[in-house]
Image: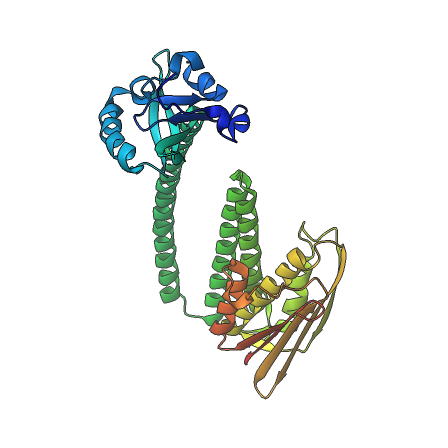
Length: 378
């Protein structure tokens, strides 16, 4: 037996160390191994009888670590201190068969009498390192895919800019050449309608080709917004009052379109409309129509998550050149911790921005569902 050797049987945690999932090794103040648990044998390949009394750094660590270990032992022996005591490090170790492998090493100080001992807990992190390497490969692959996708989007954006430039040039030429207002209005209407259909078709094609459910939903919501604007243009063209839209009729038409959506077709959502005959010009009709579209769509999606029945009320009136719009539902309501006007959600942010575009005001109530109150100058 080594002089003043460490007696593991007197350590209360010996029985626990014998079944530990990590290697537990105790070194004396000269760096010699005085305790070696069964897991240490499994990790390093040495039997207890082969390793006790050996200098740990010479048999368990690669040569590049020997100098650092030897420099630290005198201070540890004299003062019980060292740079690595109380720290967890990632190092390399060496097995009996010469294989070098990664470990996680935690060293703690033990006092036995007047001597200092170091308790080392060693974990073989070979699998973790391999997993990290695989994750790094996947990360690099993902970056390559993102870069390629970005390149394609830039090319598409460049082509679209060219097409938009060409279309603007054509429209400018037409505006200069057409003299009669009726012909000009008809030509603009058809071009806008075709553009809406083109954008809807592009979004529909992109939605069909994407595998992301979140992206598909976002593209479908974009289509709904475009259809809302297209409906206003259609009614504007057909309206007897040139330049204004009968918003009461527009809301009825919009609700009819929304109720045909797949997400609400199987739900019994009653929509009650109480809207005066209010005529809005294009600058007011488009943002107001988008607001109604966003609020009703949000209600369809979120207000009735656990039931197929519900009620949505739409009221709109005008007084003293001011328009008052109220949309409410009897759904679950917006959770109180959510500030809808500070939300990063596209739909809620769009509602807030559109109200600002109207130079109006908006407030929300959460009693027995959700209610929006919007007002703006006619």
